[in-house]
Length: 211
Image (cartoon, rainbow, N blue to C red; front, top):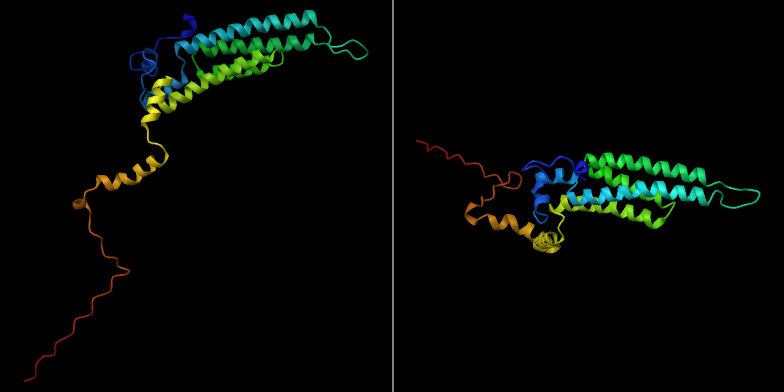
């Protein structure tokens, strides 16, 4: 477990506050680093899923190869053993790739690998395959929460969502913002438009008195 958890981030690095306190709200400048990495619970679940996929990728194809060498007997027989072995090898290769991504704590690569493993297992047992797909979706959902709210804690997200203005209130606050901050004394008088302001009449010349 320690080999896949990776080096512990230094104090002040992205994701350190989230690991110490799940309810802590990360500032926007630290959210990108937290999204790209994995916290200890995510590492634990991902490692367990990859270990399970490795064991199942060996056991299920071996069982299918031993028990079901052909799909039907007769004139046209279809051997399933080569397909099972090929699919099992692909799953094991994906597991190796997943272990490397988990060692580097790359969230996107781990989630993508779990998606592929899940789709591969749907050809054997659909329920197992969908479990891996859901786990990959869970990792991406947590990344989306970190990006939008700065935390993955449901209670902290609910409090922040309730505090934010919604729909009409947000629009009214946006419209009323500039008018409320400006005082009447600070307003500048309207300037005369050169296009619509009439020109002043020319001055009449006063004739000089004759002697």
